[in-house]
Image (cartoon, rainbow, N blue to C red; front, side, top):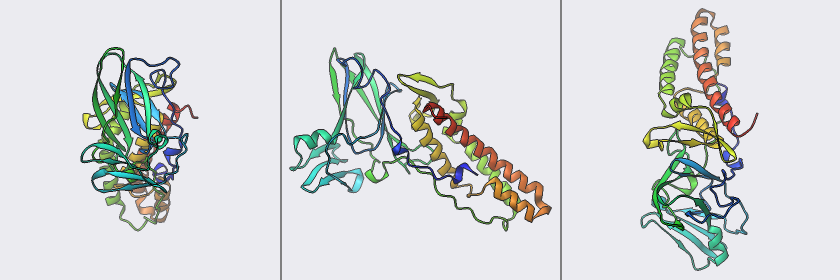
Length: 311
């Protein structure tokens, strides 16, 4: 499978930018809505209001930060240090952030990033998507969901708790694994075909694959293109996704299929058919199964490139 054999660069290197007039950098000041603060060490985040994507953010180094160590402690808590000592931390049991004695006002401001997001008075669902590899193989995000009441012409301050399973060392977008292509010609071909058929059915049963197959045409959301996926409630329900999220999901699917489909390609199976001419039809069947899944996953990457405005 060509797609399963690609080594892709970290999606963290992709630029994430605000999605229009709902975010802090809008052309008009936000006076009614939500003032959201998040620690600026979680990697890229995607911010949703009522399932609509309003901000995609990648941490920058605009602040003069000299801390370099994020120390994980049990239960998802963490602490951040620099050469002068403790800067800040998060207590996952008490669900609170705290600052160390060495945290100057500048360091405190740099520890949190703040958005001002327009929202009408009333109740809103605020969802934060955090990249979190190994949380789920097919859906590489953790979701923090908060109900926010916006009252009158004011900005309601919100600093959501991090999800219970969040850990700094897993807060990343997945990378595709390197190819592990070996000689498979010694394997019995009929059991291999049966295994691939089972893997295909499992692949087609993945919730994200079904949602991507059913996805409507991309639409514009602010300055970005997004697509709406109808996912089950445990994966966040129906909502918008941008190109970077779709690429992360596609890569997670690649990892998921690596668990059930070895790093075989239609090409090296074809080589086996030449070495074992008595089983040409079975080898061709296996190659066709692999190519079908490979082409399907490649279509998801193509969708991501389309949403990102790439060829």
